[in-house]
Length: 449
Ligand code: SAH
Image 1 (cartoon, rainbow, N blue to C red):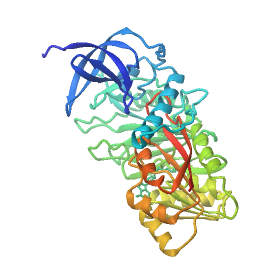
Image 2: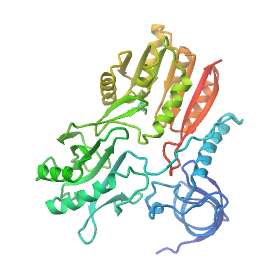
Image 3: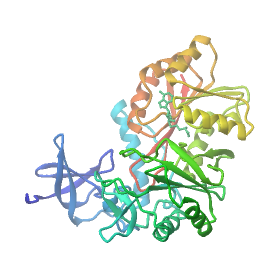
Image 4: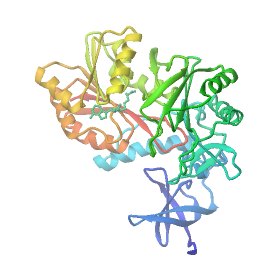
């Protein structure tokens, strides 16, 4: 075995992906869990495209922002890069991350508001998915995949998941033993349950359990489900999802409801949403009110205004905006999301929203051709941001205000360079939707010049 080379160095920054940037005599090494000003001994684990990635061997001088993490396995799980960083320092990092992105793209400093964090930054996730397997003793285990492998690291705790979920997972494993239901074995293609998914509702007492099975046949399912629900009456619906493919994608196409109504409900800023096992829904139900609350505040809608919610997903922003505006048009490329959005409008008795399934750029073009005057446009695009044809259509449409919700400050700042030809950047507000991770969302108000 090749001998590991140990290097000492100082952490000079945190990278865009949340890794410590360690300056050593042999160059820069990126390592998880190292924070600015720390001196460390590290080793290189692998090199990708000339960039060295490593691990910490020894901490020589600690950052004053380093704290004892709650989770004993946060360094191997990889889900929470920042559990060892104080929450105040996490928020400061996020504010600066947005600032840096703007500085790089504009070559000047912007006023970025302080990142809005949570009072309690733990146990916020409403969607939990865990793989099942067996350990070498044949015990059923659940946990997470070790980074870049399919080896399950067994754990029954997680400090960011909704606390209601872990006791359910624990009891499912013990009931599987009593009912002789096997976890799926990826190598031998035997066994039954591959993954357990739990979605919890923040505002209603409802929990959805989805059992992802390898085969359609699920022997003993009725008694098994009955036993789970008896033990956990807080579960209001149970779904069997069938995924026969050899893939990293957790959910298959086909599913059936084994118990309850097949969906749960939750609400954002007073609007109700029906959530099925496959629906997209924001995973931090507390901060989603903060993020979209700011978006609505910035739009400052009045009853005569026409609004477009491009990239509308299941219609969240559209439906909240519809309560204040004259007419809202929601546009989204995924058909299932549009079906959810339309259903969500109905259950809330909201009639002034029109949802359409199309590419946002094409849709905007059509609006331009029809000559419809639009007052406010919300955009909440995926990580890759807006494309140029969308930006051009948006500039032609020239709404008074644009509210940009972004999950990637790099593409956000890039897009803003183009939009700023016609728009002032009035507010840049980062919001912490994912405490303990390096991700940061932002909401911006742009007004026409
Ligand atoms: N505000 C939404 C979430 C938006 S996430 C909600 O709360 O549900 C970004 C959305 O943009 C995704 O739903 C994605 O499917 C959609 N999308 C991606 N590319 C698109 C395109 N070219 N045109 C329209 N929608 C697109």
